[in-house]
Length: 234
Ligand SMILES: *Cc1c(COP(=O)(O)O)cnc(C)c1O
Image 1: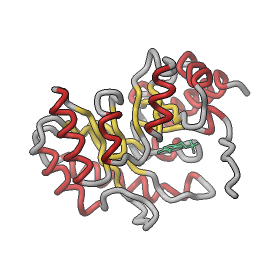
Image 2: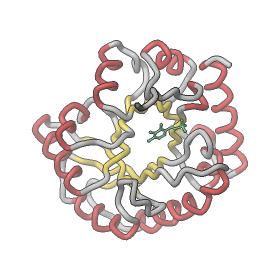
Image 3: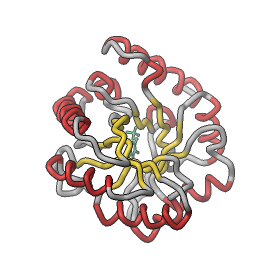
């Protein structure tokens, strides 16, 4: 299967999942998680009709961006972001999915203010309460939204989650359901600079389940580009 064929198949499955949930397929944004794929492969995914590209590593994003890999679609940052790299991402990424601390929120606000722009972000939720993962706990989200409401150069557009790795996409339904409830609970509160319109969850193995639970951004890598071959560690 080519990248073009894979994108068509993923889009077909997104549309089917949306329809069976009584939702419009056009509500759901397909982000190609393009880590470890070179500029020409990313361009093929863009040409095939993904809605955005998502990168995990700042250096890799800058290199491929300089080659015009993402031309035609918005660029999203989806990986763990270190504070000292914020300056490379603010204004370059249309949406940062992975804001996992108040310190990071503050740094993004500071850099965006210096550049005179408003950066759209999502708050990452550690929905599986995993020690190995970053993100706010569900309990911390109201305070994080209130803090974001004080900042003028950030707009929180919603929530993002990476649930625990599982064998079968259905196993993550419990986490997606919890995210849906958290999203609903926090939509009711009104803060300045907060517009809760996105819920980013679902990857290659579970995006259909995520859509059934209300996701409107899915981040799909291997189902588009094929399995990633990680270099062997010595
Ligand atoms: C790699 C990655 C994805 C996509 O993973 P696949 O299982 O290959 O679809 C989604 N989100 C994030 C944050 C990622 O790092």
